[in-house]
Image (cartoon, rainbow, N blue to C red; front, side, top):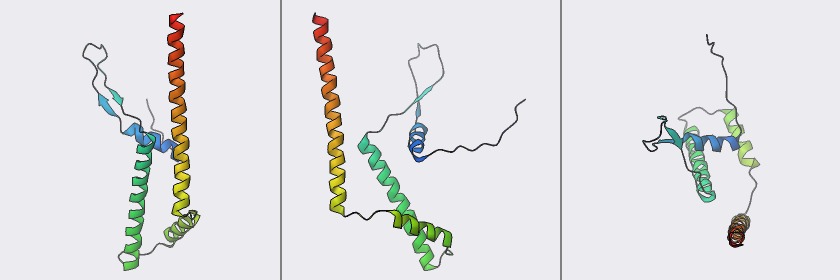
Length: 138
């Protein structure tokens, strides 16, 4: 006999992105000659730029929701909540003030570092392929 046990799932922000990706998995049909009739779920992993784009869109949606809430409070449509107001103030004040030129410079430096790592990994992969072919010739 099974007894239900109340449980909660707690995860951090890094785990959330993986869980979001896993939740997007769709069942895929495999060839009919397989003896297993179960469907497997697959999804594709996003590139860095796709992940960045999704994160920016998500943040824009959150900011839009906050703006709507603040506008509704200012117009008197909904009552003000001091706890939420203080939380928003703390959140906004914790964001460092960075000039757009400095942010662009930091972003471009990070992007150049990322491109260099991709280039070096491709170069290493090519070197290994050449070494393997030379080894097969000997």
